[in-house]
Image (cartoon, rainbow, N blue to C red; front, side, top):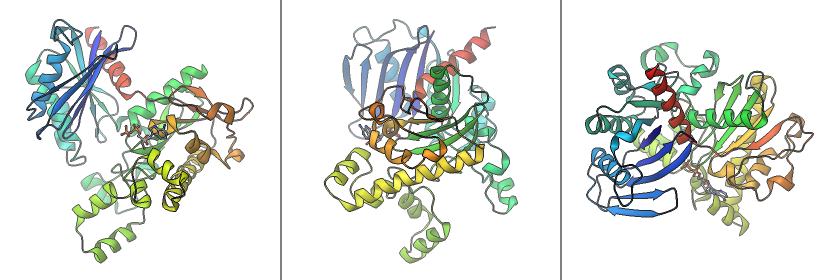
Amino acid sequence: MKILVLNCGSSSIKYQFFSLVDNSLIAKGIVEKIGMKGSFLKHEKQDGQKVIFEGEIMDHKIGIEYILGVLSSAKHGCISRLEEISAVGHRVVHGGELFTESKLVDEDVINALEKYTELAPLHNPPNLKGIYALRALLPSIPQVAVFDTAFHTTMPVYSYMYAIPYALYKKYGIRRYGFHGTSHRFVSMRACEILGRSCQGLKVITCHLGNGTSVCAIKDGHSVDTSMGFTPVEGLIMGTRSGDIDMGAVSYIMDKEKIGTKSASVLFNKHSGLLGISGLSSDMREIREGADKGDERCQLALKMFDYRVKKYIGSYAAAMGGLDVLIFTGGIGENSDTTRSGICEGLEFLGIDLDESINQGLRGKEAVISKKDARVKVMVVPTNEELMIAIDTQKIIEHLKN
Ligand code: ADP
């Protein structure tokens, strides 16, 4: 079975094409600058062969036509007929309270997603554009929606509610939803596979540290808490997002700077985090370079980043009444040994004890990085949200056939 996975953003479409006979990636690529000057498609085959097509990619439908075109092209493609695509799996950011698992796309799903665009105005509309485009281009191919929020729908009510008037929850759905769910689910499942353990009875904390960052507490395979909230700005310090901040400071800044909600949202989402503190970059590698050269604000940004993750690990261990497995993933979690050390330092009282001879220099590879006799298994597990989406899609399609 061959599955196309799409991640449609506002001006880009990332895609991966899998063969699920052996979970292998056949091809991947990205359409960028949709609706702008200089739009193009970059396509890469499994053997590393790359090709770029420039063109007037004015909307998502044309972008998807490009993708289908290259996948089925004689020269660069990997299928001879589009019917070889068994199904399309979409990354959908917000599934609200309704979608507790991945779903076959039908009218009801589309209507619900239209409703949830209010909750994710930047993300759900392009996700929907991808779904509509595929419906128009390949109406007989089933589509599956895989939600970032679904994994967190198991959070208990006392964990997802904000202490604001209850009526606002009822009226507008103001609560914590959490994001990155597909990644937290994938790496926690993979860790259990690697350890040869059932997720039942395990207390796991997953740290997804990329440009966006979040931590998740997973008990018996279910998310019981996560650091992102109503929007992805809550929680950890991120590349450009502030993470947790006193809302009193938010309104004070808005008053003093005479800015409205739109500008405030840009300030806390795009100009804060590592970029805001360092004044240099949102990219962890550049911050690390700056810190190594003695830049004090880069050094501060690193300390703050590690400290915030450490605090969440402590609080989630308390929330679950213990901890068995701690997982690092995402660009930073998978590649930065110094970040992993900085976060774990001083957590020996929780049973976290890194084996630096394994941790140092480890990049992008699955490994247990804690000492053999440590109470908590600390692991690096590279995330693969696209594969998880493809696997979910396959399961739903196979279920349809039976
Ligand atoms: P996204 O959330 O956009 O998918 P990624 O998961 O790719 O982002 O993570 C991007 C982050 O990973 C950047 O801050 C980048 O600096 C960091 N990163 C990538 N490689 C390394 C590395 N070798 N050492 C430290 N940080 C790294």
